[in-house]
Length: 251
Ligand code: ZN
Image (tube, rainbow, N blue to C red; front, top):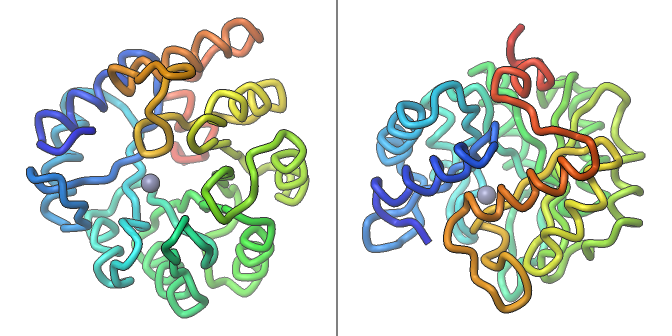
């Protein structure tokens, strides 16, 4: 697990070199404590951009459970082109990940003001409905929308192809989406998403294993496995420039 600046850049570059067009970024202090500190994000993201030319960065506004909304919003002050936006409260194992309506309204307001495209993190079907209703009211940035269906968090929607299909059918035409399977479902969910026209996120935030009992040596190893799966299915991965066009970030 990367803690230091050097380790975080090494891991991002391993993913980029393996074919990742987007890096989702969390940061930690050197002792491993998760933080949403704006300056820590600035230093890490600048260093990743230098090591991975053209890569799209999506800093987290989820942080870690127990952080305040103000604390979590700090990376949006850096005007990233995208950032995550978590779309509802849910259990995270023994913890509660709080994303109540006031929090979501505040995050939506910030992203509208700073012209940040959210990646809508949906752990449950109701989260999609919340996004669509808030977009209609002008409280969240609208089309084209990017969703990330994060399935397999203990306490949330199980990571099955059927559940993924149900959620994909609930989003508006013209939206883009990514599937993220937690733990041992990471590659099963990728295998379901690729032929459905979805994108895939893998990495140490979600899963540490390359296969049963085999720890991945780097984020790049996890990415390479998905790149190989996509190639087998005739869906070569996008370059960062192509991904930027697909997401509507080039307009
Ligand atoms: Zn995250």
